[in-house]
Image (cartoon, rainbow, N blue to C red; front, side):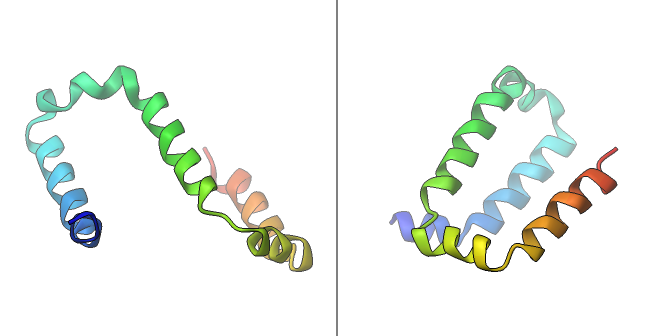
Length: 76
C-alpha cells in the first residue's frame, strides 16, 4: 500500500499544487509549519544516505563544489 502511494507521488504533488493555486485559502493553515515540514523532509533524505554516498563525495568532490558554487551564484 505504501509503495503504491509513493509510486503516485507525482500525481499527489500536481494535485496539491493545483489545489493551492486555485484555492490558496485551503493551504494557508500550513504556512506556520513550513520550516518544520522542510526539516522533516531534509532529515528523511539524509537518513537514506549510505557510507558509500559519503565516500563518493570525497573521491569526486567536483560535482559537490559545483553545486555549492551554483547555489550561491543563482540564489537571489
